[in-house]
Length: 186
Image 1: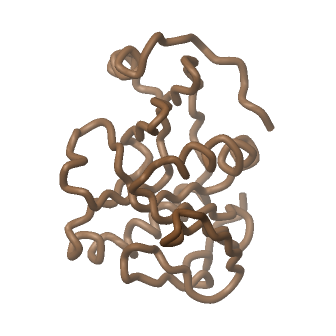
Image 2: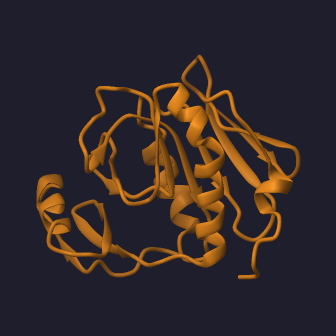
């Protein structure tokens, strides 16, 4: 599914941030356009929450911050997104509302955003020099698609349907069976 019609435009990333100050809703800023982000399902929320709970103490031990979808990410081409889960380990990335140097991003796929997460966001996220891992999690079944930056700067792709999901760069593994256990139906 492609993006809906934008609700309005903004001349710059700074104007986008000013607009965000005037509303309770979340909007993505793509190519000068503002697109409202709709709320997710309980299943979506539980998957993100389980990742945060599983990784929080390890992230803290490594002087990293694990963030939910309420903090904006500014890509190198000045696009503004709200990733479902974002790990920041660079202490210089310290603005309260906007992050620029994530090392891990996780998006949980939903029917309305899957094409965007796999296409537009993948292309833009891979341009972020600090990003080491981009994970797409299925909402419907135990399945993780993992994009990892290699030492050469190229990206590898792996699909995991069972076993341990490694949240690089953290030394943390999450069992997919545990992550997806006892989730409500969509």
